[in-house]
Length: 307
Image (cartoon, rainbow, N blue to C red; front, side, top):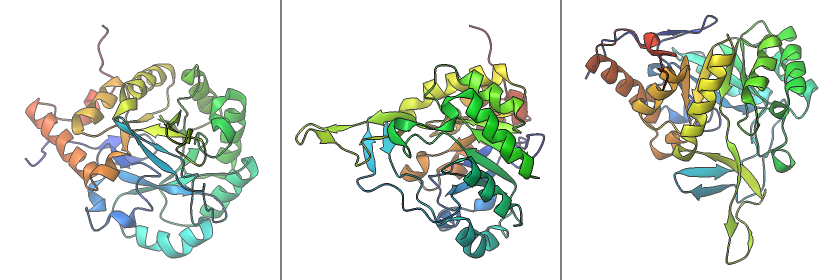
């Protein structure tokens, strides 16, 4: 069915042709998926996380299948900003959709350095500040676990960026709204959530962890109800736009996040199962809107009713 519904989303700082983004870490640098889909059909995509210099990531094994999900400990392997700007970004500029760069750093200074370098490049719609990856430092330690470091880093990055900043939050906290508010007070233009849940798998024959890193991040359908709950809580507690993610496999899954308060969504693990998943989800959202008489998908955002 051809969608007649208006799927555009205005985040205030960025207008998307539809609410579906491909999530960082599951979509390479975008170009890897060109054989499987028309990238211009997406609202946008978030490229694989970039440190200033190339990064090898964690030793293998780095992936373990889990019931209804996947545990990864890739460790943010990447080519670094210089290679990205020289070899990849020129090709991305030709794609008619929003290109968002996931920014990483081993410390605050590196985050700032990455953004300062990217500020000199064209063709980037926004930055997603990855302060929440659970499989880089020991036992999942990251900036997004604490409000004060979150506030400090977001404020520093905003001070050097002319582009919008989306702060990616961790679910591995007791009060995610508190962290979201810290990012909001520091000037973030939006928040995205959730990153993966800190997890572990054990080989009972060897009695050793199945990941070389011991811990990894759990993603996939298993985490979706938790992610929806956190999106609802954060959307109710901040004024900046919320981008939701976590186990989205279908258009119905994506719509659940929108109704809970997300203005857009990111599709991650589904890309491993079905390389065309994100485009299919766009189509399914349009079909649902047409079938339910919804003229504008943005009218669904935050319409969840009290129990």
